[in-house]
Length: 414
Image 1 (cartoon, helix red, strand yellow):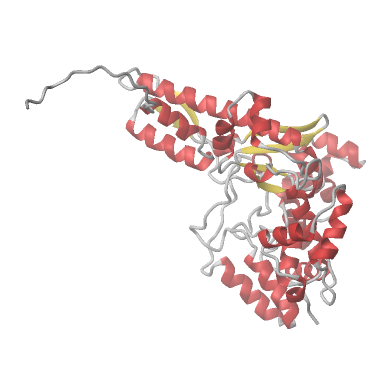
Image 2 (cartoon, helix red, strand yellow):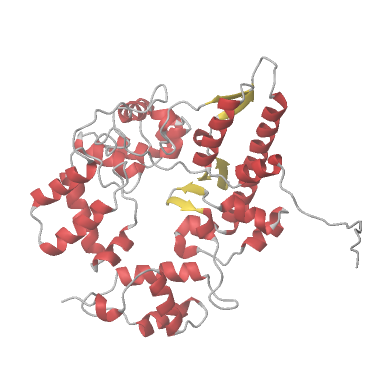
């Protein structure tokens, strides 16, 4: 029996990612730091792509361009010891009682490389099993004893306020300036003076004094300390409400070289993709924060139910595109830097409050509970049910496990 060779025609359809499509997806899902690295790699290979870095390498929230005459970061002299070694030496020298020492150590572990606290006090209270008032008392003690002043600050205004108090410059004019840092960033010294009822020369003198303060008192301990992570978006509240913008200080500007040559078309394509990424990121971020205005005003306890499908439909994108955009993307708010993905939360029950808001409320309730008689899961469920929908005890237990909080029996202290 002889075998016969047959020729047949078959039509198939396959999805193939071209190099351009792969680059577009990579740019779309990159945060500011990752996109900067990618652009540096492309500029090193393609002389037609020119990168211009923003002035100053470290991102200082909101006020860097105002408080420094040239926008430069104040120079730091590196001390030999690390920040952690310095802080724990401070705690050891205070000879605190054991309960307060545990709180102080938890506060030290929560420090960012800048010297600011990177975690809210309710979380630290929960971790240490202490009351929120006890944590605040220890924090005030550490702030008063810290050298350099400004360590253990909760935000920029707190950091500057501590340094002003240490320098004996915390008068009414300085308080007015620190309470209106948003106006300082816009150079509206005359408005600050009008609102505070103080002479404008006094306000301008206090703004000049701020240039001598150190916005990141912890960064001078280690010469190669990692900088604060630069957020991709910035949310600010103005007279007309909340506004969201791209953090231009986090990305280099991308332009074409003046001289023509090989690689010019590829450079144009990269510039278009970066511009498209910024437009998409901004539209998605604006829609997310438009829906979560209550969280911007009141904190994470104000989260409302929101899904990626809802946001994608509102901005006219596919859900997978929204998922790529929010992956690793952060937004700077007056309440801290948030991951955009953390703002997506479903309702615990149909028509009920957001699960993320309930978890935040539960964490705050546990942080403020009596350590001698901690709240049981049943008591927490009853208290959380006041939000408008009944919450089952097993739901509370699940949320507590997600937050890594022990049950009431293990939280009880004498």
